[in-house]
Image (cartoon, rainbow, N blue to C red; front, side, top):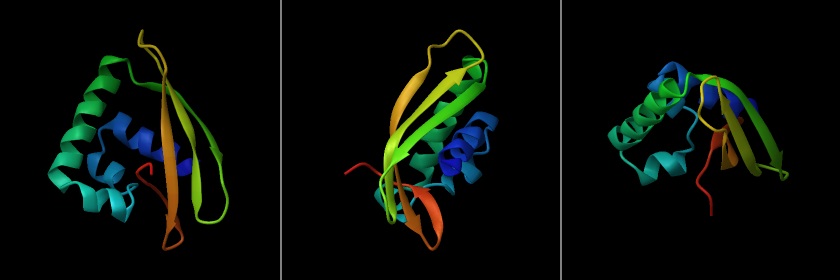
Length: 101
């Protein structure tokens, strides 16, 4: 859960390099780094336009080295909250965001 929360916090603060560090090798292998950075930068701009992140609620299930569930992000401004599917995989002892199957 903290991986997902920390990822959204990094995006909200515009710390794109830090946010990229929460992605699994599989995600980083699917997209070039500049495309990932561009997507995260756009998401940061959207978060800023929404007044910043108020809270992130994560619900995960699963066992072993895989977890899946949802992350619900609420904003300080007028934007409606957003719920996204999240998948996590353990890589070298750390949880990383992974693409859905």
